[in-house]
Length: 462
Image (tube, rainbow, N blue to C red; front, top):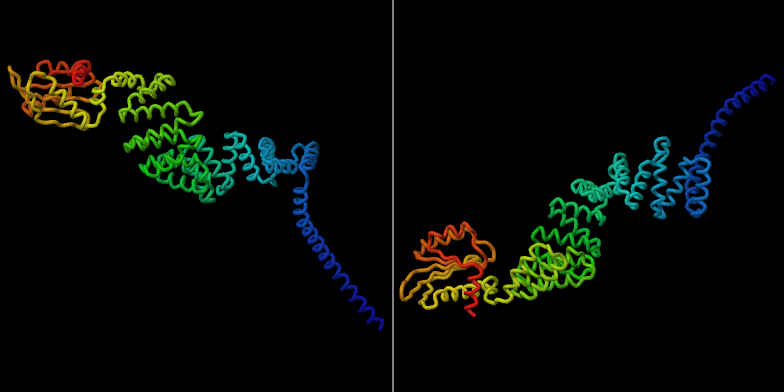
């Protein structure tokens, strides 16, 4: 009995000693598990508590810790988060700049986020070089981040590196296809490198996303203009004429398109609408007045044209050929026949040339054989002239210019004289003849009539 008891006791003791390590192991596992569980629960609670703290408490607590340790990363992260959320970009940039310096020694810091936020703050502070370096470094860590690609593209656009800008912005568009500013600057970059079809597509999408973005709409109009899509361009520029910012420039394009299509009345309205705006940029105002004057000249409204040219001369005496135009058309303004000779439609020009040819020989019988007008630049009239002393076939050439007529034109006239068997030729112009041209006709039966003599003939027609 004693042996059995002793054996039983020994077995019990053996089991007890075996169970002790197991119990200790299970206890340790339980303690560790509870600790991990508590930490998991405490971590979000801690963040929630931090978010719930007031700005003053966060700043006070962070400054207290920084006073003890100026490189306290946790304190700097709290301040950086606060400033970033409040969009205090100057303090955000400064704080994340300090954190950037700590990244080399503190591997627990999120270097990607720190560099992105520093760069975003730098852009807001217009410190573009610092922003560019940080975004570029962040992209070396991770390439497929929208904020990095978009902002690098934007910065390259500002630096006029349009090829690079288009590359980054294309990557950003893959990540977020409907981001309006990405589409805008991608379209602008493509337009700058003359990829107009692709640019038009991007800009159209950007405008659809934000119809109030008049700048992008204006560039879309320019892109359509470059693509010879005059209908779409005209629609956009006509819509923008009244905009206080884009209106004056849009009026120039709208007027140019209408003028090219010979819609001179519409073009006049475009330019006049553009000039009604207040605070127009000097160069834009000058161009509006210049183009308006040209339209008036094309419609033979010389007094109105001269009024705008003289206004423009006051604004900028050396603007393009304003002085030359004023001199030319001031004289023309007092000579109706000269206006017709230089500016009228082809039919009126041909009529006045016929009258001039008939009036060159007052006491002669003049029979007009043929009249031809070449591209509204000059008219040739073949006539049979008969006087009491002589008869001959004469070829008249009337040139619509106030400039210099050269030897080549006179050689062409001489060739035509031989072709039509004219015994004599006359070349009349509102300009002058070159010295080589005058030398060419010295041994030939061609009379030259320059501006002053032409005016006398024109005055006799009145």
